[in-house]
Image (cartoon, rainbow over all chains, first blue to last red; front, side, top):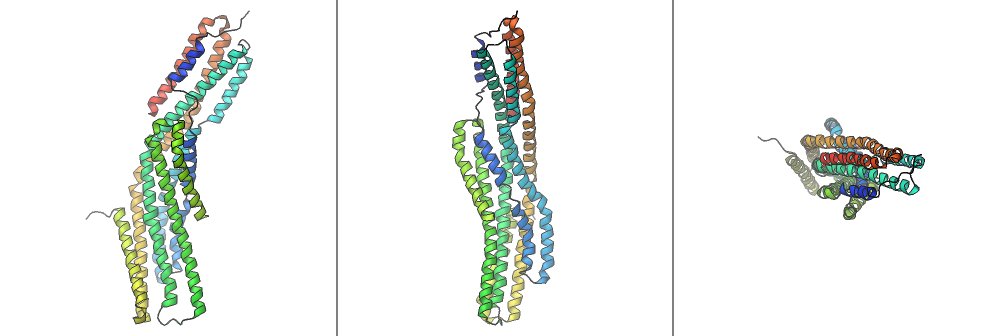
Length: 286
Length: 140
């Protein structure tokens, strides 16, 4: 007759020592990285800025005589040819952050299911005492979670290490396009709109009609207001990208402490700043 | 002559834009002395300058995009590796399931031979350490 098995007393302490030896605490905390990655993937995704860059040429037709329209069409075609590359910038940033976020969660839900299966199997192991079942289940769970955590921590570190420089380069390039290109181009649009209404109000030989002048002033203010809103949107997106770059740079510089609660606390202000910048962008662009 | 770099191109665009703005300011401040034809002629020049500035910004953006192709390829490569890593977690999970099953198996079946259990568990531990070490050397 089989007798209940009693695992050697030295096993459990040894097993626990093993967990410690491989650096497995089972409680690596990737919440901060996950929050940052999720927030970043949403915030970096701002397709409106590209659409607006292309649509600007059609908008400007109403402020220019017809003889310039062919030139504006040609420019729009050039910008349309750039759209795919501009989209790739954003999609690459978004995809990277989604990949980083994916690493922080992994297959944890599927994995937890396997732990439940383990629990069910343990209940069928009638030869173990209840204390032993509990101990085996606890240690198996710790082992499994711990090894997965170590694996994910290593992969997260590797991704942040390899991805930081190209990510910084792409963010820098996107910021340059937004601020030195799109923002400056919107200033051109603002000038075009101003001169259009100034012509109407100030051109020689124009009869001074107070009602028409008042309407023109109102229309000018509205048109400039719309452009100003676009300019602020570009600035807000630039601020988002700046915070995203700073946050990722911090993670890169402290990648050896990824999963550590202390790092999570120290990293928290970077997440808050990114969230604040993203909120501003949403408020301006909605 | 060296090719124009993006920063120079953006700066050139700014100069055209600023020239147009200056011309517009001059036109308005001298409107009392300008005929309608002169006013319109200057206005047309301003539009040309502004459209030229816009075209230069478009070209400069094209240069930035060209310069950044390498960074995009590098980041996409890292991303591909990360996605593959997420998929590998499923494989690791299977290995861990097996390890857990082995612990149970050893406990249940070895009831008649308790001395064999520590060795079986050690084997599981060794396998797990090997997984961790392999991931560590791959990942750092």
